[in-house]
Length: 206
Image (cartoon, rainbow, N blue to C red):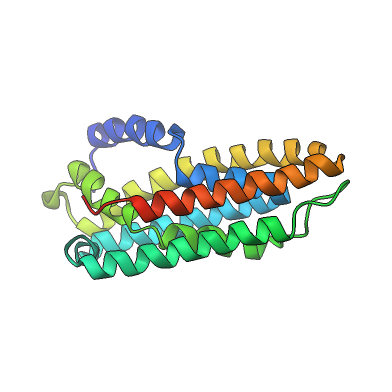
């Protein structure tokens, strides 16, 4: 339902977007530093699922509600801010211990990644602005085209963000050999999550 030329034009744009540092990449970086490679990969998978939910909502037309109802946008946004600040507090309260990374279950990292993505209404606004440029209603199901294009972005995003998390996890594991570095990782992760919260708090609907 999507012609080859459109797909060939879309893939380079999607790759460029995936390689651009953003909130998802920074979140996986923080998870990797704090908990290691496996939770970082799980967080990347959670982000992918959250992104596909946004894509589905946009394809169904429900995403327009976020674009037109300021109060809904703000409710979702402030829930996300509160969640990120809670993660920052957790990073300070439970920093990595010297010689080991804190035990963060992959299921929890997956949930955190999904919630952080879902509570960022800017994602669905981006989907609404970007994907329709590559969609042709005459080619068939609009929702189907949204899902195909969203899956392309999701696949690239998973690989890139997981790779960042794996690298950070290896670095974090080495740094936890020192108690001072362990405390520093806690501060860095708290700063990352707090920065993401501030970024989300300050975004505008436009």
